[in-house]
Image (cartoon, rainbow, N blue to C red; front, top):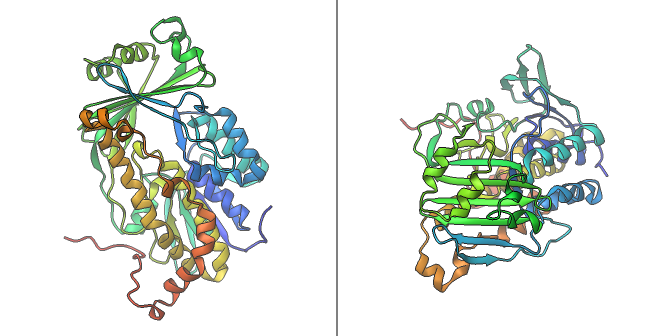
Length: 438
C-alpha cells in the first residue's frame, strides 16, 4: 500500500535496477515520480547478476512478496549444491562452501540480468503505473534553490523538486555535482563473460555433470585470475565469468566482443575442465573494469540533484553488491523525502548522503579484498584452513535493512544537517562542486 501523497515531484534518469528501485520506492512513499531512459526499448541483455539478502528484503516488500517470488523462480537454486571452489591447476575442490538457508523475507537472488530486469521494469510500469519515457536522451541537468530539471535531446525541459541521476558511470549529472570531469583509472583487470544454452555442454562427458544435476556453481582460483561457472534453470542455461589482469588504457568501463583464443591463453596450464566449458561458448563479452576513487560528494550545490548507484559509486564485480547498493540508495532517498517533506527536499538529500556514504564506501572495499583473497591465494594456508578461500557473506552487509535504518536514523541526522551548532564536532559531507586541488 502506498503512503499518503507528499506533493514531492521526482525525476529519475536511468531505468536500471537503481533507477527503477528509486522510482518504485518513491511511489511507495507517496511521491510523484517519473523515469527518463536513453534506451529506445527494453532488451533482455546481459548475463548473471547477484542480489544479496539486503536486496531481497527490499524486493519482498513489493506487492506483499509477489515480486520476490517471481524473481526467485528465475534464479539459481544452490540449496543442495553449494559453491565448489577448485585449485586452478589440479582441479581439486579445496573448499565446498554450503549455501546459507534462504530467508523467504530476504532471499538471495542470482539470475540473468535481463530476465530479472524485465520483471522489475514491468512491475514499475504496468502494475504501479510509473511513467517510463524510453528513447529520451538527457543532454543537460540544471538546478536552482527551488527546483531541478533536465533538458532532453528534443529540447524539452522537465522540472521537478529533485532529479536523481541513476544513469551509470557516464552520467552527465556527475559533472554538475562535482564541478569538473573526473577521469576514471584502470583497475588493472578485465572480465570475459558469457551466457548460453547447455546444448553442447550436455553432449560432452567432461561437462555433462553440470547440466544433469540441477543448478551448479563452481569456481577455479588461480594467480591473478578467477573463473566462475554456473548452470541455472535446472542445468538448462550456462554462464561463466573470468576475471584477469588487463592493463588496457581505456576511458571508461566498456564492453567489446571477446575472443576465445585470448581466453585459452589465460587458461594455459589450468584444469582441462575449464577449457572444455569455454569451448562450448558461442560468443562472449570482453568487459574492461575501470576504477573510480570514492566521490567526495553525490549531491549538487543546491542539493536538488542526487547521484545514485553506479553514477555515484561503481563497484567491482567481486563485491557482488553493486546493484544491491544502488537499490539501498533508492530506498533511503525515498524515506528521507517522505520524512523531510516538500519544504525540506535539500535537507532530505543531505540526510540521504550522510546515511549512505560510509556504508557504501565500506562495501565497495570488499570488491577489492575478495578479489585479492582469490588472486593472491596462500595455498598452504588454504590446506590448513579451507574456509579462508570462501566467498565472504558478511552479516553487516546482508542483514542490513535500508528502509528500517533510514526511518530509525532520520530524525537525529536531519537535526545534524539542519542544526549542526547543537552538536559537538559534527563533520558533515560536502555538498556541491568540489574544488580540485591543483
